[in-house]
Length: 527
Ligand code: SIN
Image (tube, rainbow, N blue to C red):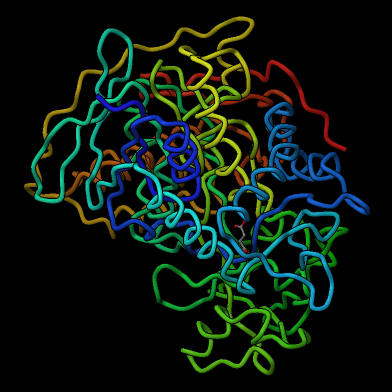
C-alpha cells in the first residue's frame, strides 16, 4: 500500500508527487504515456503570477480572475491561487526552471494576455513555457524515490467502505491489476479530445473526470469548455496554438476584409477575456460562412526570437509571421470545470483528491483567465500534499464543495453500479464523437443542437477505454449545457443570449446521469 498515488504527469500531478516524495511519503506516479508527454508541455503563453508588486498586486490578479470567471469563481480559491502562486513559482525556479529575464536587468520579462489588466505573465524559452515547467518537474520527480509507472492506464477508482483505496489499472503489458494507496490524486488533465478541433494532445481524454463521474464523486461546471480563440487554422492535430501573448505584444485580429474588429466588441479590444474573443470570431465564421479569420502579428519586432515555437509551426506551412497574416479559428482548449474539490483539493470521496485541469476548485469559474492554469496546478497540487501531511481525512464545505455541501445541502448520490466491461463490437470511432461535439456543442450552442449532440452520444458505442471516458465527459458536458439556459463565460446559448441571476450557481453531477443545480453559497463580486 503506497501513501500517495498520483494519476497524471503534468504540472499538477508532478508538483504533488515531488512535494509528497520529499516529505518521505511512498509515492507512485502513473502516466498513460511516457513521463513528460503531458498537455503541460504545450502551454505557450506562460504563468500568471505577481512576483514583484510595484505596479501590480495579487489583488489585481484576483480581480482579473474573477472578472474572467463571469461570476462563478470561488473568491477564497482565487485568493489562495494569487497569494500562494508566487512562492510556488520561486520553488519551481529553485527546482531548476528558467524563466525569461529582461536583458541587462534583474527582472523577469513579463507579457500580457487576454483579461489581464497589466503585464504579469512569466514565460520561458519565449513561447515554450509549459515545456520548461514540465522539464523541471520531470527532472525533479526523477530525483526523488517516487516510483514511476509509465504507459500504465488508470481505469477506475477502487472504493471500499466509503473511501478511495487506489485504482484499477491496465499496465504496460495490458494486464489489469490494482494499485492501492491511502491517498489517490487525480491529475489527469483535460478533455479537449471531445472535439474535432483542439489544441490538446491525443491523451487529453478526460480520464480522471470520467472516473469520478462513474464513481459518483461530485463533478461540476463541465459545460464551461474553453475555446482558445486563435489556434492555427491547419489540419494538424493538436492544432498549433497562436498564443494570446501574440496579442499581448501587439498582434491584431482581422476579418476577411482586413478589418480589426475587436475594438467594436470590448474596451480591451484584442485583449478582452478569452470567451469574448472566441465568441466574436465564432459569430463571424457562422454569419459569413467562413472557416477562419486572421491574426496579424506583422508589427511584433523580433518575432522569431520572442516566439520560436510559433515561428517553427507556421514556418512549416510556409508562413512568415513578419510578413503574412496567420489563419486562425477557435479550438477546444481547457475545461474550466471538473472533479469538485474543497480548498485543499479533497473531493467528495475521502481518500480521493484532484488538482489541475481535471479538478474544479473554483479558481476558474465559467472561463479560466489566460495563463492561470500552470499556476493552478502548482498551487493546488502542493496544497493536497500539505493537507495529507496535516492528516486531513475528509472534505470540507469550502471552495466548490462549499456550494455543494454548505447550507441546504444537496444529497450526494451513491456510486452507480460498475459498468460492464467494454464490448467493442460495432463500436463508434472517436472521430464520430468529435464531429458530433464540434457540430452541436461547440462555441455557439442552442437547445436543438445540444439535443442532437445528446442523441448522437447516447447512440455511440465507445471502442476503447479512452473513448468511453470521452463519451462520459461529453454526455455530462452536453447535459449541463442543456440545463444551463443562459449564456455565461465560455457557455454561449444562442437561444438564451443573456446571463441570468437564476443560474448563478453550478450544475453538479453526483452519481445520477442528470445534473443538480446548487446556487453559489457566497457570491464573489466582480468589478
Ligand atoms: C496561450 O498561450 O495563449 C495559452 C495560454 C493559456 O491557455 O493559459
